[in-house]
Amino acid sequence: MTLDPKSLELFVRIATIGAIGKAGTELGFSRTAATERLQELETTVGTQLLHRTTRTVSLTADGEAFLIHARRILSDIDEALSELQDQTPRLSGQLRIASSASFGRKFLVPIVAKFMELYPKLSVQLHLSDTPFDIVKNGYDLSIRLGSPGSSNLKSRHIGESQRIFAAAPSYLEKHGAPTELDELRKHNCIIRSDIRTWQTRRPNGKNEDFRVSGNFDTNLAEAVTEALLAGVGIARKCKWEVAEYLETGELVRVLDDHTVMPQWGIFAVRPGLRKPPARVSSFIDFIEQEFKKIPALTKTISC
Image 1 (cartoon, rainbow, N blue to C red):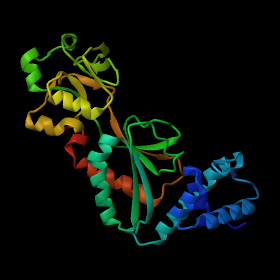
Image 2: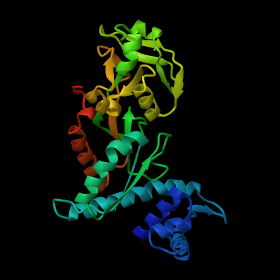
Image 3: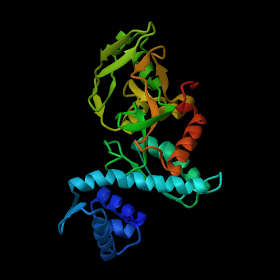
Image 4: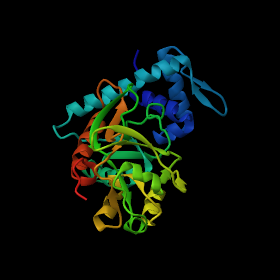
């Protein structure tokens, strides 16, 4: 049995986006050619891989099982080709990356641009969203996640820090005073994110405590929390990287800086649990880790 890598790639892409014509176009095939290739692949493996109607395309049970192997085969081919090249890999193909919206715009876009300049034959698809995104289901190579690495079915690598702090504008503190003890937060207007009114904190004595706060401004958007801080609305929890520039200019200041916002967050490169990632993926993870080390806001030791 001979499997055509292009047909495997087409099958994986169809399974990912659920459209034969669109997948074919992405890979340079007409809809007719894409359909013929898919039929030839099913004949070769001896089973139907996809349910097809005039409106929808979905995996059969055999298709779901074969998809895992198809992705692994394509990954092995990519890795084999990379090893046959020079010591400095000539990376090519498409790198699919997912991340949260704010972090991705601020840090990933410029880093991706530098990486593409080093490897001009590489193309990048960057998905930025603050809603949950399944990189395996959607056929992505990796995700850059803040917090914890998440699912144990995925491989993760710790590549940076996303330390969180309490912050406020000087104008707010001039009117209401600066809290010196955690209990004093009860007297303050706290900016609420997505109705989360219990803040986890570690006191200077090392004791962890869940602390209930209140406030008259609640938003689901991180940037809106920052703007409310700058406007002097109240006190908020923020990642240092979100407000580092305002801490430097004095537009915002830290409060309760001897307390630690819990849980402490890291930055992780998370990828599907393949035996070995393609060269473009491992090279990008190495690259982004080194780039993050150059950014004070993404390390533990920031002076503000």
